[in-house]
Amino acid sequence: MSQIAQLTLIKSEFSIKHNRIDTLAFDQENKAFVIIEYKRSQSYSVVDQGISYLNLMLDYKADFIIEYNETQSKVLKRNDLDWSQSKVMFVSTSFTEVQKQSTNFKDLAIELWEIKQYENDIVLINPIKKTKSAPNIKQVQGVSDSEIAKVTREIKVFTEDDHLKDKSDDVVELYEAYKQAIVNLVPDVDIEAKKLYIAFKKNKNIVDIVVLKNSLKLFINCKSGDLDDSKDLMRDVSAVGHWGNGDYEVVVADTKDLEYIMSLIKQAI
Image 1 (cartoon, rainbow, N blue to C red):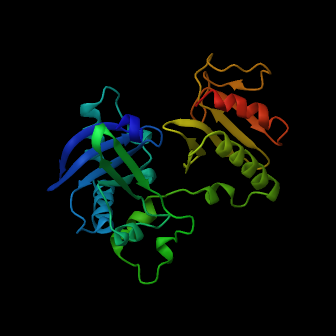
Image 2 (cartoon, one colour):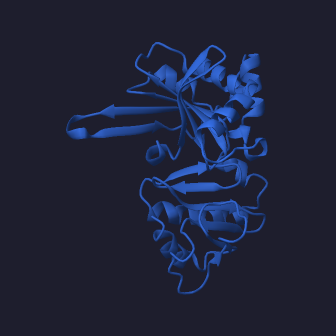
Image 3 (tube, one colour):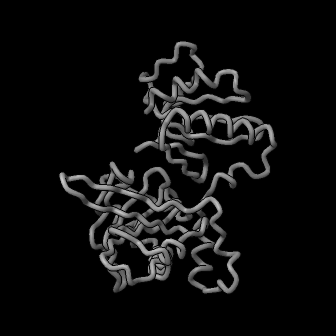
């Protein structure tokens, strides 16, 4: 679980209010709980069950915190959590096109993961990505279900557009330049918009970008002392609070050091 999804196992078969959750996990990066359900059959509605579980979590927050504190060495306080980043993951050998389409909303915190086993202990893991043109579920005509409305009101799924809206064309262009350079540097990199930054991942966070008003702030995911920075361009932030992963930070307002910064990012792969 930690290697594939970067999650911490809290409890298997977590029972709460006459419901049994297959796996309760915790996302340390987002400071949020994640419910994981495993399915053998394709004859079920992932949206209905997913929405039901998200509402269950929002209604009984204290029970989830207690379960965490009873199973983990670190005590979790209410202020340590970000409930808006909660989500449900469904894991199955396959999903129907109807199931994929029904969850293809950019503001719906439900993920589908296909996992298949082959000969020679080969396992294929395929998280189903939402399409770039995925609509907002609030905009769908006829969607007024109180459970869906509650979930979409309290849980926020962030996108790159959320970080780029209201930014100048120059900043958007700067972000696209660094994004493209990272994509070219790291094949099949995953780009995930978080609440405070945009994460670029290859099994783990490689670099995180915070989009500022007139510049970008990049965090390279290397521990203090592990980065070979001959130009001394990066700032060591290991002793101060910061948003992104890693101990090195740099603020850029142009692309003059782009190639050199890519050589630094490459060290985090």
